[in-house]
Length: 314
Image 1: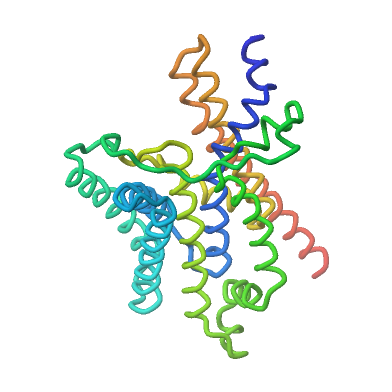
Image 2 (image 1 turned 45 degrees about the vertical axis):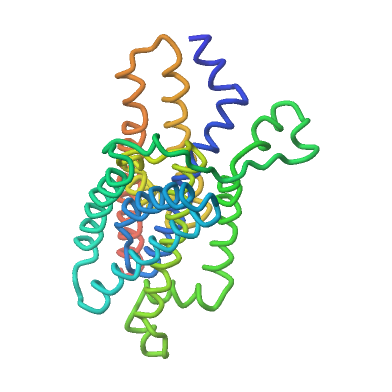
């Protein structure tokens, strides 16, 4: 028990939370933008997986982590355009199209890695690059705080910066307000001259950008290789964070950090003399319990609003 408490209250654990939460925060913010536009991006998982694979492979053959980053983002944007085309142009169900893209990404990444390495499991035979780690002057010398905030991967810092930028975009820019208007009432938005399809395309592409950064962090920040289905459901957990965060950037960030903390706890406790089965249960149990609490809170809020409406109508 004492060992577990020491782990939880250590700087290493807090630092791990930030690192583990990064591939949840970024796709969650992307999912938030898409959700507020009325076009839920169920393909977050596939976009992350494709970007993680492309980033590693391109960095290997070009010897540039930045070209790997660009390749990962580009492929995610192509997937966003495909998702938008089938849903907005051909009127296909966006959930089914998103699931199809996820399945395609899972199979295609394994196939490409196998062609290049002969290994269906991972790209460990290739020497890939990683995104740079940032050491913050002055802060790095502060006890505890320096261990937590300094020495993180570049994309980890981008994840927290992105939270503020997404808030500013959604609530302080014309495009962001148009995206939210389209999601709330597309007919009313259309009546005042807003191009609904264009706004949803834009939202999906921004969503893909953030998802791509999360995927690249997995393979070029969290580790230095691509592994089969390495996203492990993070795209779907990110969608859960959107709803648990009340569809707000700050709330989404907090929800993603909670899920990240559960994942980090399972990692740290795995080093102690605790049954692995119990440790592996922590992230999914936290996710399920969070969704149950969210459903209960939403039901109570709906009942309260109904009672207020009944009182005012009497």
